[in-house]
Amino acid sequence: MSLAKRLNGPLGTLLAPLGWLYGAIAALRVHAYRKGWKASKRPPLPTLSIGNISAGGTGKTPLLLEALRWLEQHDATVGVLSRGYGGDEGILLRNRFPRVSLVEDPDRRRGLQTLLRGGRPEVLLLDDGFQHLKLQRDVDVVLMDATCPFGRCLPAGLFRERLAALARADLVILSRVDLVNQATRDTIWQRVAASRPGLPTPEVEGRMAPSVIRSLKDQSEQNCRGWQGKEVGLAAGIGNPDSFRVLAEELGMLVRAEHRLPDHHPWTPELVEKLKRGEIGGWKGPWLVTEKDAVKIDSGTEDFFELLVDWEFVSGAEDFHQHLAALHLPARAARIEPLWAAHDPEGKGH
Image (cartoon, rainbow, N blue to C red; front, side):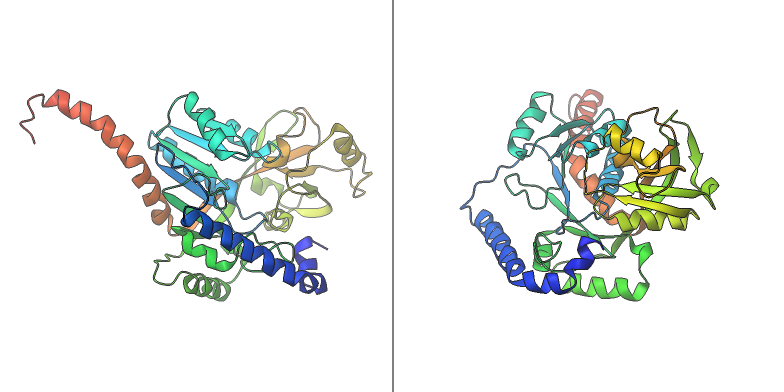
């Protein structure tokens, strides 16, 4: 049974007072930063944070990659500050966007100084930055998983903050909306709006869209639909392993074994060999892993394949992209102004 399901039962009820205390302390911490009792620093460049209020996986990495794709497509130079959990997300990001400046450091202020020493990007992205208040930001985007949007705070549940924390967000995005019905989505948005009195709450929604399946042996890529009816084992160390199984089954795969690891769990050659020999799960066929897991498995490994997924907006893409455009606007204006001055040196066009 998953941790989330156990916490929904008697264990969560037993720990509920501790969850209430955790939520209260988190709220007091935010209050201390707002009052200036705890110091925070404003980065010298437009900054966007992508985070969540839960400790489980919400699809944050695919959304971050979508932001990088859009900014790169619009010729923005981007820096990313990440805590660096396990290193897997950093390797994934570098593989997809080698031109992006990335610094991984649990101390975001120290990480910012490291980033700036390597050059000043036009836009800064904070990965998983909603609770990291030592650095200020211009835009706070909070991602919520439609399959697990609400619950108790740690350790009674999987949440870092109470729902009222959403009032700090500039934009709330609902992920994995394809896994719930419209009535559920409507109920979620009603509760989100109630937690943000007087604030606009556009219904921005998205899903994880399978892209391709890549062989770890030779990096060859296959169409996902070609795996319909194929028997596979699933192995993943991610925040929401249920969503990985759902993706595989939606593609028509027949899941014959499953090995779930903690989020960001390291992979060893011994673990890979045990899976290949069928010592775990009793399955000797092909193993499918996530992109985050694949970066920690030796290239050239036979019978292992990674499923690549991309973020896909279901609704409200323009709201997210407008925030990105506003962050990049000062840099674009700075580029255009010298060109305009060279075209009109006497300022007659003003």
